Length: 428
Ligand SMILES: *Cc1c(COP(=O)(O)O)cnc(C)c1O
Image (cartoon, rainbow, N blue to C red; front, side, top):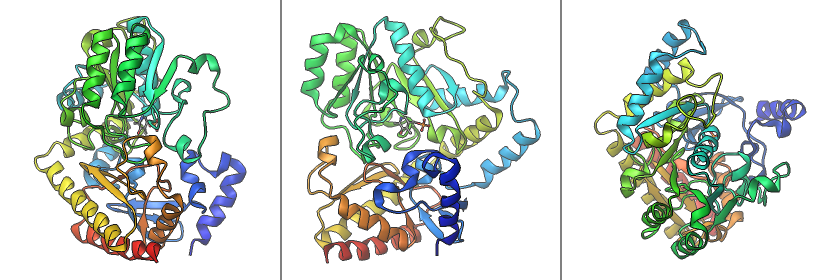
């Protein structure tokens, strides 16, 4: 029964565009109406009708500790009592900055903002201001938030709804963005040889999570580092999703890549609106007020958001945290792979840390074109059947999924059991 969700969606559609405040939430691509969520705790979300679901969306990434963890709730209660916004510096902002710098190796100096979009938008402004160049290179199917220059061959909702670009984005804004295929080393070299001296930066999801889940192949990231260094361009790793997710130190710690700038979001705010960008001290010195590149924010470094971020980072830095989370995810991914194999459904499943993805294709997915070979009818059926069985997944083939510390081994096994049943139905 989802009667209350249906009634709420009817109400919402009158006053909110499409009834939602972010497009993919509408569940259009899987042919259904969204569930309205009432509350969430641990590994579960509860809809307006009181149904419980085992959650693998985790608010699209932030909830690595699970929902409403007591230790984060406790610091939030204190923070509320102390006042929710001052528009003046606080000690907590230094605490979170120090934690981030200590955790992400390439970051010497960091600026807090309110979302991943703000982080990436500011990072390319800085790259352009620092280099005096305009051109930004990105990769097809990567999503870097909804700022104008990134809405070229973008991932996430743009991919889900198969949108080429967006009305309202002037050509003058995107003419300085070049999007090329992910994992295509030859293309990177070719483009950098031809116009490297005009390239302000290359921005990349070091493990892609907005066209489904795609790992970097061969020496892809290494070549990006070499080519940017060679041509005086900056390398920006967009770790808004992968930061604190695929490993404590982010994807850059797994692949041993030192970017010039890193963008962060999602987990860094522990479920409150936070983004951040940081990196080399000499580059960050160009940001206002220490330098001329302007960037500001009324609510940036907000005390509630800082409190949640600090407590979340403290929790994930505890010994054994990533080992336990990784084991759970490996167990789940192995189970899903076995379920598909048993049913004879063409399926590719992969993971990094507690981030994972599944495509209904027999091929090894290396880029957005490959991702599009996934059987979307299979996905739609799989998504809807899993939901009916109480498993909450992202309503799009072109999104990654997440396991949280609150997921128990029993819940993982339940998920595998349900997936095995659903995969068998798909084959039948
Ligand atoms: C989610 C995401 C963003 C945008 O972050 P918002 O907080 O939604 O603005 C940017 N880059 C990547 C890689 C993301 O996954």
